[in-house]
Length: 385
Ligand SMILES: Cc1ncc(COP(=O)(O)O)c(C=O)c1O
Image (cartoon, rainbow, N blue to C red; front, side, top):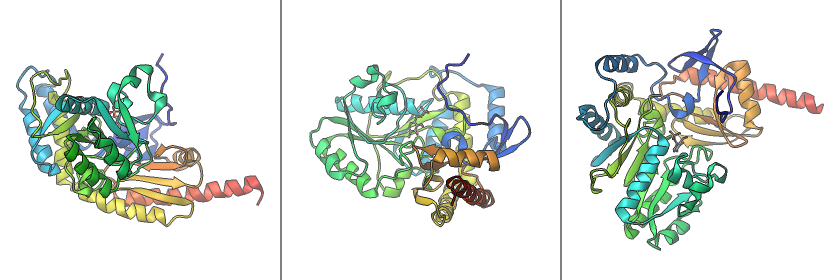
């Protein structure tokens, strides 16, 4: 038996291609959820399959006790494609682990233990990562010993007042809050965080686990604000489903042997998956596509009755509905075979593969309108007007 911790959608995919999943009955589903923002270059992209297959036939894994030039190549390619020059790369396996290492490194560097985080944040489930996550329900007593304070996203006076104490090792902010409902920090807030960190010897950590790798229409979402963080964490879209994650660390932060480590981190297959993703992002201009298609989709959604607010950047979009998202999503899945994500009670979360086409998004919009009509009609019938 499985340890039952997940709430499952009514679908069992057995194959996937591009933006489509196929279940065991051969029914096709349009994937606007991307396995939780993980599928960046589309399911089973031919170049990804080819590179991983070839690598697997040569060498799949060796630990970090040997020379692995794929890691150097990956560090150089990320710098090149992201435009973040002068950062060094540490590789690990998941988003939580990336943030855990970022927080630990900030603590090593500053000699301080406290961390400032934002309300409605989500940074993962390991000890320090979950402590800076604003969800008491997923924190065990073990996690509550960390020194963490929370401020509202965009509250510049609270940020400045906290950092002026010079007690904080780090401020951690999501490039775009995902679980919190697709909330984009204002450029003014990120710039104020940069300035306050510089003034107080605090490190600025940007969690780009969900918003990174082109999803926001820039390689990293913080680039919309023109700032440079001290540490950037990456995961989900980085490997298109292969578990690979990492942190980019400003060159001024010195490494010390044994400071961080991971058995699986940066193995041959993981690096190959991450390199294949970067190759496809570049070749297919996926960052630019995400910006353009995201703008179009947000505009279409804003014109819909029943839509209260649309938030986000690029292909990371939150839609506040005037009805519970659970009802809407169930209908979309059952009647139109479309997968979507959610946040809270009323927010639909759209995280499609960055390879999604305008036609696929138009198909979604048609189904969105039909679902709205259907639910409104049912509601009217139910209430007898
Ligand atoms: C912004 C952010 N950080 C960290 C995580 C944790 O990533 P993982 O589940 O790979 O540990 C998530 C996962 O949803 C996330 O959205």
